[in-house]
Image 1 (cartoon, helix red, strand yellow):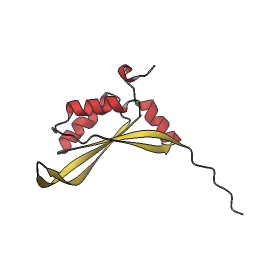
Image 2 (cartoon, helix red, strand yellow; image 1 turned 180 degrees about the vertical axis):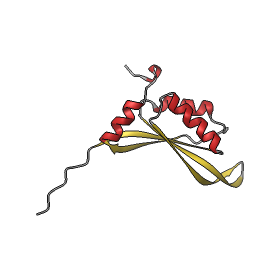
Image 3 (cartoon, rainbow, N blue to C red; image 1 turned 60 degrees about the vertical axis):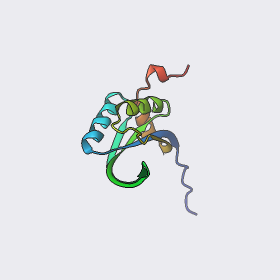
Image 4 (cartoon, helix red, strand yellow; image 1 turned 120 degrees about the vertical axis):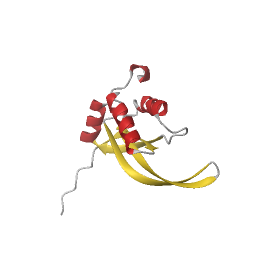
Length: 120
């Protein structure tokens, strides 16, 4: 009989995603997020977006930023992205993910929740 694998222990982390038009904008936002310690990691990848804007179909090359953070820091992260974003209507999407315990602990150690976001 094969041994039964132990259940995988998982913890929650959040991923906040947004898009920008250029590599320079993605680098600027990623550095601002990391400097503020609102994410442990920002992954940047090129994508092609298809969407309707002001009544017309659009197709644009963009850079997607995926910011790995904590649930407690997500509101402050969204606030920073909104304040520094070059788009009039930025995509700001939050997903709760389950990560390995080790990775989630690293994220939680790297992210600093602003005092204004701490709930007592």
